[in-house]
Image 1 (cartoon, rainbow, N blue to C red):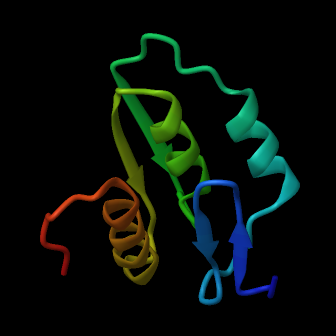
Image 2: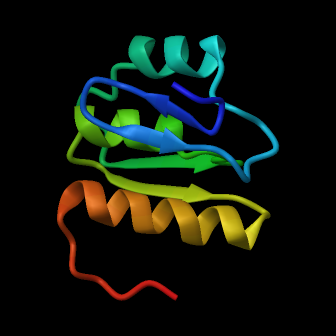
Length: 91
């Protein structure tokens, strides 16, 4: 596995253009959080999108993931829609 990607059981995070790579802390936090019956989840500074993707696997809540870097947002929206089979149009 190269440093440009981080592979999980069901998905891979491509992080070659991300300033902050996937780390142990984000993986542990994503594993630890139990969204329960939450209706909405907000991931501020989503970076690689790891927490948003992990929580999307655990919950049916409306999930918003935002980041200041437009390139990261566009890239991770494409990855998210690919993982979930959406046909939505992404810029």
